Image (cartoon, rainbow, N blue to C red; front, side):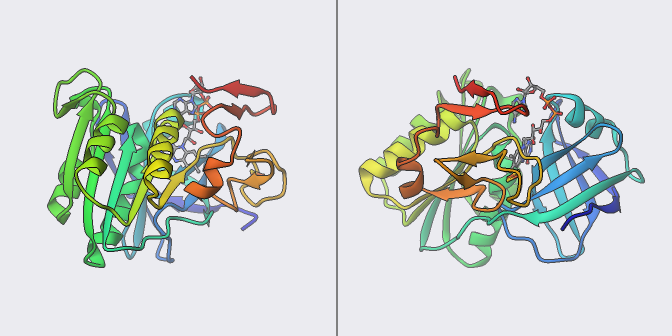
Length: 262
Ligand SMILES: Cc1cc2nc3c(=O)[nH]c(=O)nc-3n(C[C@H](O)[C@H](O)[C@H](O)COP(=O)(O)OP(=O)(O)OC[C@H]3O[C@@H](n4cnc5c(N)ncnc54)[C@H](O)[C@@H]3O)c2cc1C
Ligand code: FES
């Protein structure tokens, strides 16, 4: 997995004003929650979770936040990118009834896990959070597949008015789940993991850290006193995260400097 495979984007879908999905040919098996290093020529190589798992192609869904994602945002069908992967462990989907909690672009990595759970006839409840209704995406996709979808917005423009972690609290109070799966802003995931620990619920969260090699060699992505997000994660269980001092507290930037999470 040393070198990127050059692939030609064959479809681009605009999900929101700032979020797009690019599809590329890739017929190998990929598990929900795994990621690729995506080489954007002349700019950077960045980690992206797989958001669509089709037999002959895969997709990434991303928000434009900086140099690499802005350049990827400009790409059209026919343009070339490099992909290195699949990397990391992915979600371990089990149990009869599963709650998925996603905030912002976290739904990109959660959506294929929801689809996998549905294809295995598991009861599937999804809580999606965004700043406002314009920033929500994949709601119809997941409803059409048969998931029970709840939405939360910070401004109350649709669904529950407030944080998706508070909506999650209501959902777990009134129901019982065998597993909770979460991806999104780390403060949100921290709350989800805390709630699950208190209630004795099995939980898995997908972490974001600065990834360089993606192969467990450079140590750039270490969390929890030595676990590497790129090979030991990005998905970690609640037991590991409950003991992890940096979870929800700080990340490291490209130079290794601590960046505190607000
Ligand atoms: C395993 C893994 C999977 C990921 N999957 C996805 C995915 O499916 N979709 C997706 O959109 N992103 C995903 N990311 C995050 C994505 O890799 C970063 O957003 C990307 O590297 C930013 O690169 P850039 O050059 O555009 O921005 P940079 O120039 O590196 O950063 C520009 C600015 O954006 C800020 N920034 C960087 N990352 C984020 C972020 N995630 N959210 C908000 N602000 C940020 C920086 O602090 C900086 O201020 C994933 C990250 C990891 C580790
Ligand atoms: S990015 Fe190099 S060890 Fe994870």
